[in-house]
Length: 185
Ligand code: FNR
Image (cartoon, rainbow, N blue to C red):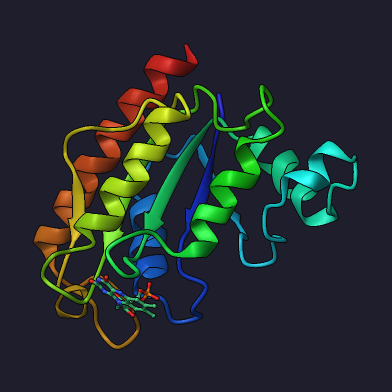
């Protein structure tokens, strides 16, 4: 059975380290996974009036429809000011509404935080985890995926050169696969 996994990346930067790590991590999933890159950069800012008054922007409709079709989600985030970038929080908020119709509900997830710094996006990782737990998403607990000092594990083409990092990401993706299978049986 094909398992569809949405890849949601918190950085909108074209040469994003986070996206580079997330793409290569997603390639370590088994062959029966189809990874769908979800664009969050074009989402209108969440405003509850638009839901309440049936003036839902097309960008929300597209996003909600796309996300409702995936079985699981990989979240990869940089850290902005010790939290998640606004674009990612906005996507989470858009997907969580209207009340009772959250597209996140019960979807297994994994969080990857990535930073050129040594704290490895810890703050973003945990703020994101807090939202996902509230949204009733089973999230991989261990291993926690903190990719710090990211420039030291990537080459100029943003390919992971460090075997230890690849090995670690493989173990994380294997655990994610186990979690997904438990919830999709
Ligand atoms: C950052 N950066 C950053 N890094 C970090 O480790 N902790 C932080 O709190 C912040 N805060 C922060 C705020 C803002 C507004 C920007 C633009 C950047 C640095 C950040 O980790 C760096 O720019 C990364 O390269 C961003 O990830 P991508 O775009 O390469 O995936």
